[in-house]
Image 1 (cartoon, rainbow, N blue to C red):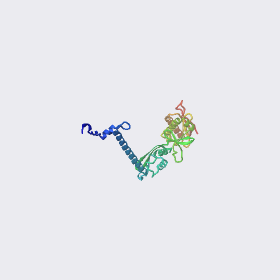
Image 2 (tube, rainbow, N blue to C red; image 1 turned 180 degrees about the vertical axis):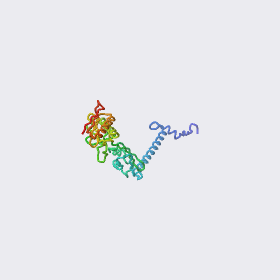
Image 3 (tube, rainbow, N blue to C red; image 1 turned 90 degrees about the vertical axis):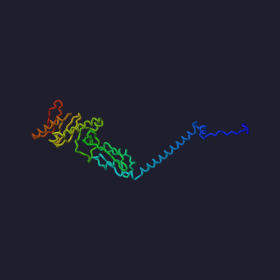
Image 4 (cartoon, rainbow, N blue to C red; image 1 turned 120 degrees about the vertical axis):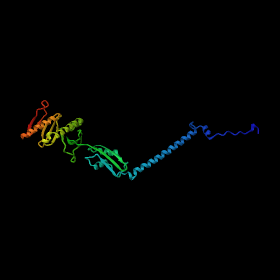
Length: 280
């Protein structure tokens, strides 16, 4: 066979070369496209498996008896009974510990006027912890209704039969004054509370019956009402320590004479050492 008639075998082309020579639909090498498809498929399988596992785990923790609430613990309470706080929270034994809405339960606990702050937490497998901070009652204030006040002068609830009543009572304020200037009213109540404490720790309290009332005048002056006879000690404006000492000396002298006073007035600001006694 002559060279001109010799059959010549076409060159063998590898699969990789053929793939490389064939353009992809987007102009990218086909090998890279296949690798990307394999990666995407792997990711989809992993994500799908993860979702399935997560769903199964969630279903388990929400239905397993192991995570049922078996204990509700209350800490920080003194005046309010633990049972009352648990009842207010709405959390019940037997409920799944993860299904309990702790934010809603906290809002319900804070609706109790005695509760100033509260936090709720889960303790696995089956405990809910309710931590509370209670308000302290330092005085009563007559504002239409008789209200309990905190030491910082904040009225926080109406006095009820089960509430403490052996507290100094502040009179002379009005609901309108409280609404118009709440911070100013709170400062006045705080000053009245401080004055009551100063009286209770002074000589006069040991000589006479306990303090009955702290009255605030329209001008911001202060008057104490003490004893069963409701003797008035008119103090005027602060400071009060020296005036209380003066009142104690006057009362001691009246007791020595066997006399009874209706009022002792120490509110003369121009002559602070002058004391006026109004006899019964």
